[in-house]
Image (cartoon, rainbow, N blue to C red; front, side, top):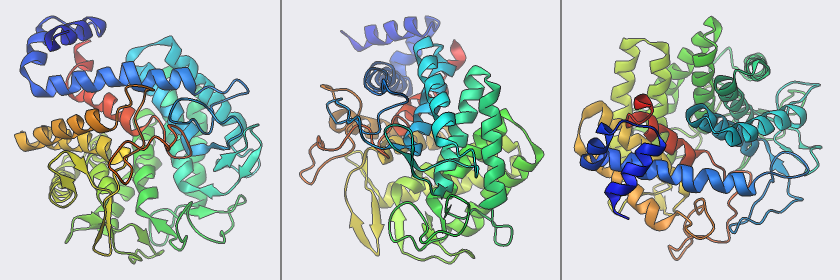
Length: 423
């Protein structure tokens, strides 16, 4: 089947006007969006529809590369919140009732089993039967719960989801917000006492991290879109200020990853994936506040972040390296930085009109097609192994592998290419 016919059929499916065919055939940005959207609708989402639901409730905590679940695996709060977000957004854009059923299933399960009815917040993990396992309160995990619930409300109008999102927001503001130094503390015990160690992995010495703030930022951005509260507006602006003045190192154009309460850097790590992800999420946050001065300031920062990662971390073959630790490159190739790169480069092209960014977005997508898309079992591989082959031993779903970064790439290209506005 020719590319022209594929584009024609996709436009019919999306109910786009025939004039879109010329644009899709002529513009490489339209071809890119068409291919990414096809992967989302014909590969990523169908995998989760087919394999993810656990008959005993919710979704499996682990699904192997070939789609076979491990039914007794613990279920992660982050995975379930990301499933909630993904299928809520899929329903919002595509109005497929099957997506709504999965979004509703995720919402109901999360509220019943992950929300802590006694101490507020949400659990990090539950056992396969839904009983609490790791009851630590991780700001990172609660941020994703807000993100998922806010998206479910936007997609379905379910007021219980908005109620839960607002309650979780108020919980973070009560317990995790640092009123002295700004920003959000990483983690707590179930009853919000100080934990033995901070964080969900690593050495656990940092009371604040870049990564957690990154996802609080995106959660608060979406929540403000659906619930424009004055207090939330103030905290979202404060978060942007934290990134601009505390987390981003404007000499290197990398973020400081692990931080003390008063923002001293604890380790020297350049995380290319997180830095390029922030480049567009920070701009989205500024845009919802509708402050043109702030938007202009953030655009400069965004381009500096993209240019630095493009120069230091992006290989012209088309992939983004993982990170650099104390000057040494960690060259493992993970799935999620590639998805974030496609969005970030596309965003930079939209801001500047410079074709080099669009070409980088296309080249990264071409690398994804060749190396990460699993044409046999569906979805994406989690990364490449030490031989630069797809890592088939890594699960398709676990505490971290999920339908979030790659589906979000599809949604973003759908919006940014103009497909959605033409419906």
